[in-house]
Image (cartoon, rainbow, N blue to C red; front, top):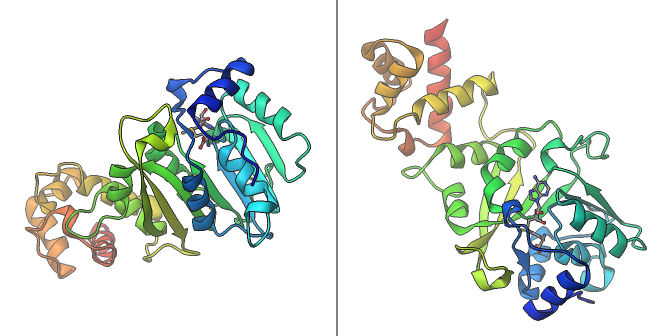
Length: 290
Ligand code: SAM
């Protein structure tokens, strides 16, 4: 595998030579550890049929590895679409990869991407990204709720966020339930801060999410289901029936009835419920609101 840079000295030289600088406001922490790149590619199981959407290619460490045949046992990806918000970096990447016909660089904000025009409308693509930490939750919601969802996401995120995403009943949050509603998350490995330049303030992790063809549970209206989750987690210290009463503007008694008729203990807190229990509760809310 040819690598463009190997260490902090080379990355600094590259930035200087190209007149580029690190924009911290865009969450720029460039990968300098080849072993992390290799683990990302292995987790994505990149092969010749793949279309990969990369969010924030930066200086192209991952882009190069995904698109180059030499480093991939199953062959290079068929198409790599890399969307970079920093215009200077996008210009640099366009120049750098101008001869690589399976790479397209788009200079734009990922949240403004038109998936149909970008040729991702058929949902048959994977996302590989070392995400800017500050967009993680917003990005997960954006992409998992999109019409054109990917089949898999292989992401570098803050370690603490990865742990919250894979949480089980007892530790659930709006974040873990929103992700697990759409897919199966797994932490592949923890990534040391020193794998990046500049190093972020906290440790990171590789998080893989396999997106289900259909959500994990059956609900008749996804928007209403998420409203129930938001209401239920509005105050973490309260028992669930109190949150339900406040959120739906019903009496405490009515809220308890909704829980009891779904065979759920009304004194429990929202974080203890499994997704299957949320399905039961949601259906009970629907019946009581009719
Ligand atoms: N992929 C590169 C790597 O691993 O070295 C860079 C990763 S860096 C953590 C995040 C990248 O995302 C930066 O290049 C940043 O400019 C870009 N970025 C930040 N916000 C973005 C957005 N809304 N849309 C697209 N790219 C964004």
